[in-house]
Image 1 (cartoon, rainbow, N blue to C red):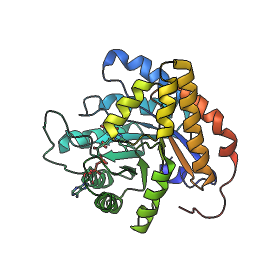
Image 2 (tube, rainbow, N blue to C red):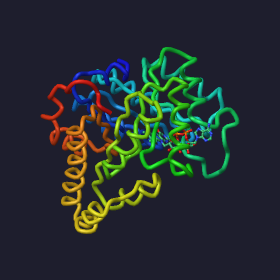
Image 3 (cartoon, rainbow, N blue to C red):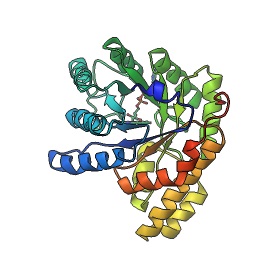
Length: 295
Ligand code: FAD
């Protein structure tokens, strides 16, 4: 099923993200965690793509397994910054063979070795390529706090428009911990004439190390209220897990109460986190959406 169709449901959708292993010896345990998460019956699941593309087969296999065994529609990610056109086209063909209809087209982070693709510079070029190769439903990434490489948020939104013009049918956000940042971003995105669904990505932080790593990579701001939680509970795993899930659930409840119709969870491959979030908001997911989409 196409993500565009799923997002037009008359209730709030809940989706989960998982990531593939970096090495073959970890494949079985990661695939098992992904399938465990699929058993919670999200509206769809996304499977990320290893930077550099070396593990593209894992992304395809995990996504296809989720779809075939659990009937959960999948969104397979694909990056282009370190790949040539032949590798990208080969991966798109692989996704097609595996029955994957939805692809998140990304540039990928700039590689540390500095070796850049000579075929692609930006995600919009990859998105156009995917569209030219079949009837895929294609999505892209967006950044409520601005992409770390962008000097101006306005310029970032202008480039976002190019992705949508290239065929992007929905956008998923980078994580954020302050919903006001997201509401402000939505206002500017809509003002720029971008009308596709924007799916907020929420990351439940369940240990202090995870926060440090995630924030360093993405440049996401951490509100004082959340810093206090990590300071107080960061050294007590059970308490931090509970506080992180509750903080994320509170963000989701606020989003739904304010008319947002889609929620995407960065599960970090933790079934217990996916389940805890689903249980915390399940009743709110059953309520029909009111009137027209307001954002
Ligand atoms: P782009 O849209 O190409 O933007 C990158 C930068 O270039 C931005 O600063 C933008 O403003 C600028 N830009 C865009 N077009 C132009 C232009 N025409 N001229 C000048 N500047 C331009 N990484 C992975 O390796 N694997 C994954 O599976 C993965 N999944 C992700 C999922 C989500 C929801 C998000 C938010 C990120 C994900 N990432 C993933 C990280 C992502 O690859 C990085 O954030 C990367 O740095 C940017 O990718 P992009 O597709 O947003 O790039």
